[in-house]
Amino acid sequence: MNQDFLPINGTDYVELYVGNAKQSSLFYQYAFGYELIAYAGPETGIRDRASYVLKQDKIRLVLTTPLKETHPIANHIKKHGDGVKVLALWVDDATKSFNETVTRGAIPHEEPKVHKDGFGEVVTASIKTYGETIHTFVERKNYKGVFLPGYKPRTSEYQATPIGLKYIDHCVGNVGWGEMNKWVDFYEKVMGFELLITFDDKDISTEYSALMSKVVSNGNGFIKFPINEPAEGKKKSQIEEYLDFYNGPGVQHMAIATDDIIHTVSELRKRGVEFLEVPASYYDDLLDRVGKIEEELKPLKDLNILVDRDEEGYLLQIFTKPVQDRPTLFFEIIQRKGAKSFGKGNFKALFEAIEREQELRGNL
Image (tube, rainbow, N blue to C red; front, side, top):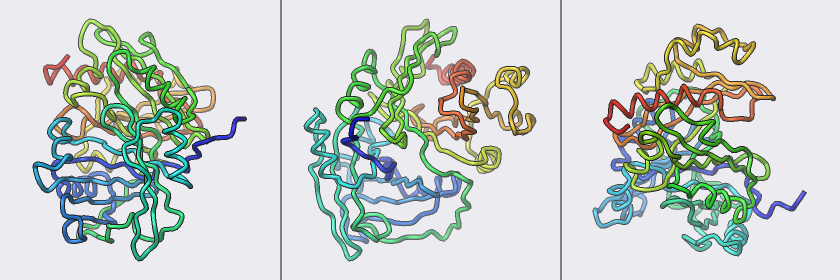
């Protein structure tokens, strides 16, 4: 086994640039059960933006909004709408991670920098990836504070109820025509990831549209990034729709793990989160397709949860509709019962569901 030149302990945080972080923060607290734990903004000495840090189990989301229209973040939001800017990776040595990846061809975004306050220090460094998305390496072994220097603890009067979200299972990137292999090469050569799985347009197609996808994973398997590109079809694919409305490549969805998908999805639905719908007929031969499962079929059908099996077990999954008005970023809720795969058996049903939504928007 080759020495992993980029050991990663997991996802440190995901930062979204949003039009109104104060309001978005309340949405994620109420609908998804995140707890507000920290804040940075004018009151903490940060003059140009406001950021809210939300946490549930091992997941940290940062929602950031600019305070002036001339701020670069304002340009990002004007171009892309609300979306993911930073996929931050928790490492033991941020400087080494930066140097190793830049030596192999990564384009630097921010050189290694030490941030200090009374709770210690954090080292960060960032490299560019697809579109305007960046990876930030975060080294926090000498830090005891709530999040990062510059952030102060902050709680909300609203008592959020967690819904069983555990950690980020994978984050999916959409890239342009013919760009998938370029970015798979980037993750393999620059970051030492391995190609885990490939789906072509025969695996992922409907009557109207198709896409291609490859999944890369880091050495310990904690970080998994599927990369999608459009493929030729009769009509516009969901990837093309995303690229049109996001104005380029970006993070399409975050898949979040739960140990009890029936509870998690019941709560999300109660709180107004909308999901893609597959036809009731999907469940008619479900058990013939996937074999024996521990869950009762009725709640899965009532909640529209999908099931798929691979050699190692099965998984349950469901996809939200986009969580902002542009048809861009959405979330997947996933529960793994041994399965290591990504629900290939559900692709057709899912993409037909997405196409129905596209058609309603007039974008198919």
